[in-house]
Image (cartoon, one colour):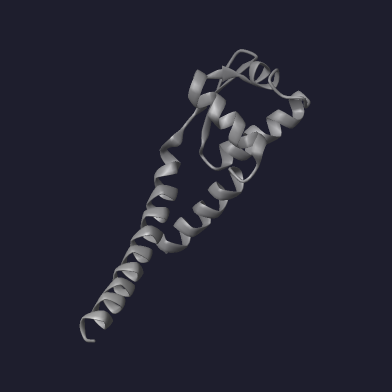
Length: 114
């Protein structure tokens, strides 16, 4: 069950960062800290509504948090979910390292027997 949930979360996470604008928004939030939605939108040639939709995708993935103060919506990066992707990539890397080590054993083992 945990494996399935992780796979679903990874899909949501990768979908969220698959878009250039969303990656840019996330980078901007990491570099400059919490920002109002209107300030974020000023950096893009698209409507406030379009930026809000991108932010909602990032929110669904858990990559940003929204705090509402009066009429101002402050958006802040939340990179806790990145750990899941990092663990997934680390697992892939370890699988490839095992395969490369095995290949190295085969290649070097084959030349020692000649």
